Amino acid sequence: MSGEEKLDLLLSGVRAKVEKLSIYELRQVARAVGVDRPAVGKKSRVTEAIMNIACGTVSPIPQSRRGAPPKSSAVDEELVDEINRCRARALGYGEDMPQKSCVSDSAYGNIENNELTLSGVLSKHGSDYVVVSDEVLGEIFVHQSYVERYSLRSGDYITCRCSRKSNNEKYGLTDVFLVNGELTDGTRGRGEFGALTRIYPQTRIYTGGNGSAACRMCDLFAPLALGQRAIISAPSKSGKTRFLKEIALGICRDYADIEVVFLLIGEQPEIVTDIKRSVVKARVFDTCFTQPAELSKNTAELAMDYAKRRVECGKDVVVLFDGITRLYRSYRSQGRPAAGVEEIKDILGCACNAEEGGSLTLVSTLSSDAADAALFNEFIGLGNMVLTLSGTLAAGRVFPSVDILKSCADREEVLLTADELRTARALRAELCKDASPEDVAAIFNSTSCNEEIISRYKNG
Image 1 (cartoon, one colour):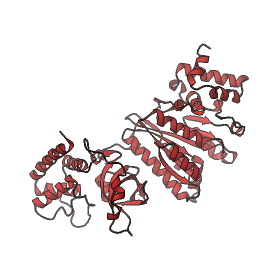
Image 2 (tube, helix red, strand yellow; image 1 turned 180 degrees about the vertical axis):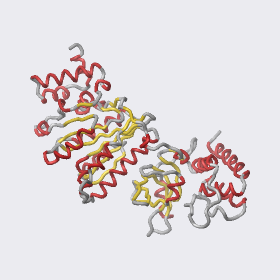
Image 3 (cartoon, rainbow, N blue to C red; image 1 turned 135 degrees about the horizontal axis):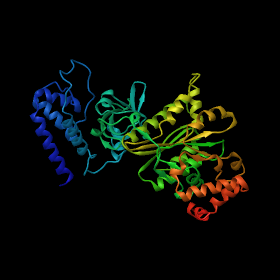
Image 4 (tube, rainbow, N blue to C red; image 1 turned 135 degrees about the vertical axis):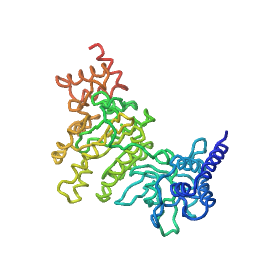
């Protein structure tokens, strides 16, 4: 059976169910799916209005709060979901139907008609909601009724239709097709991020598969796992942003089911451009040092909301956050004496391995410069994995500049294999005796994979 035939069959089933409803039940369903003036007209008029929405020929409208409230709030939610699924199929977003891209050709083709389809992240600004799109359109206003109808939350990635009456007005959302890649009926009843049961990180992430010596050192001395709260301690100009980029490239290369999110706060604009062009599979949230501190704060919160929504859907997300120190200064600029510390702790606390499924792995950079000593001492103990970059090695142009004696992960004996653990301890012991950090870096630079190093110590 073709997609069109299946759609016709579903529409026939919906019509049969709708026609059996009483006028009061019919109006409740009509109100829930977005029919214009659901309490006006005879049963036949309301039925056709519902079917027009199910067929995708008419977009739902915001629910009005004017007039007398409905006599009952009871509604057939299964039928409402079925109507929404039919609409998604009819518009090309359902199973067995040709899938439209998140930002389709029609997004540009219909600009002259002031109506287009696009995707973006839902953001809450005060009491208002907007969609932040990758397009040049800016923010798209979202009526509160759509938020309530589809149980939307800040950070949801939605595919929607928007329109405006004239070129001088802002676009407003008029229909929602997908929420976090799923049909809209999937948002009802989903769990809350804060209610997830957190357990120790258990599933290892190997980042050195792309051959990066720095990532291979991370794999051996400070192993990364799903749900970890990792902190990269580093002074200025020690290559921490480049290290994050190499981690991202390694994960994107070997883990198609892990979503990578890059959060760059107060960064140099050329670095932002490089990250976007190099790590094309990552979703990038960024601000430059030329932009206001308030924007940095909002961007960081939106990026974490986006990651939380993905975890609520059972996805594994790795957030690469550069960096804690600059975001702290953005909060401090707001003028409150205690600003910044609690907000940063909230962000670090988002890292979790959920027993119900899904994980949020957070890899953050933290400045170890003397000027930031108080801030360093405040946050360094919160990580369950710490990887330290040496400013002395970096100044001598010795890369990777990883200080293996100060780098470790909690429960590393669980994450590392027996051979890896033996090798890591042997190298640390050598460094404590007569080996130099340059010698250790040379070992990794002269090999192509960690197995070559492990084999040297297997019988030791």
